[in-house]
Image 1 (cartoon, rainbow, N blue to C red):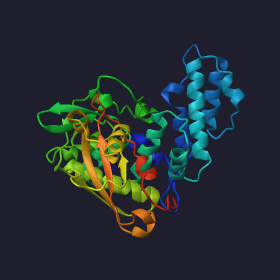
Image 2 (tube, helix red, strand yellow; image 1 turned 90 degrees about the vertical axis):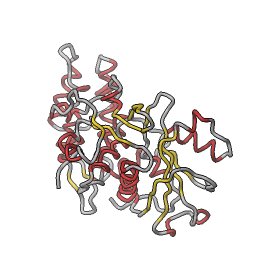
Image 3 (tube, rainbow, N blue to C red; image 1 turned 180 degrees about the horizontal axis):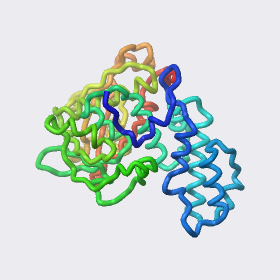
Image 4 (cartoon, helix red, strand yellow; image 1 turned 120 degrees about the vertical axis):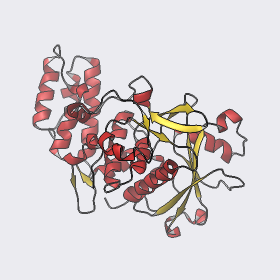
Length: 335
């Protein structure tokens, strides 16, 4: 089976007997090799010393005083974030349990970059052995913001960093070391060019046609199914639907912040104006293979999933909502 998403660092990790990802010194060293932590020529002695020590021993204990001695404000903040991330990984048996702990906390004290990095490598593990480029490209929505690219009546998505003309997400250190990010033209993934995805998976330069009834919507359903199964240990069926005509919206999950706001309005019986309704990109119906895992009051009710774009035409999927928003009794797999 061909490899993909090498930039996430999955090759640097071990797996336990249940298939969960186990942190290694090599993976932690890649974190400390991030461009944001590379001391510039004018870096203070404390910053240079910390960088040297943690590249040598990434599990080294660090106190708050060690970091507060860094003179540059931005560098000090970067070190605080990376050490918080490092400590999160070290205090859990797997990256999967670390991610679940993080998203269930009342507040996430890490920037989205770190949450997305965890989602990226965990999803790589969940999709190990997947041979469908459409599923893999659709799964990029889990950890890469997307931008709607207007084209007649089609819903075309392109990676925001590639097509947006800005860099909202810093390049991961491993990608920098591999030289994976290059200027590229966006090609819409199709049956004709799908085989090229394997060579381009770390460039994130292929567009996705999310128009209803086409292959990518079903592919996103499959990616979400694998994600839930891997992290929660439950089997679900997710099917795309065109609209929720006469549907009883007993339970729903917004797959992004905008979709959650739209779902809240629908749940309260509001009618969406045309502009708001146009932001809904995809709808799904989720059912459970084993009703026993579902909250008793909702045992026979489907769960509706909503994906939407912001008014600025950006899609920022929050895959953690699929893990924390379902009406289930048992919350996690044994990874």
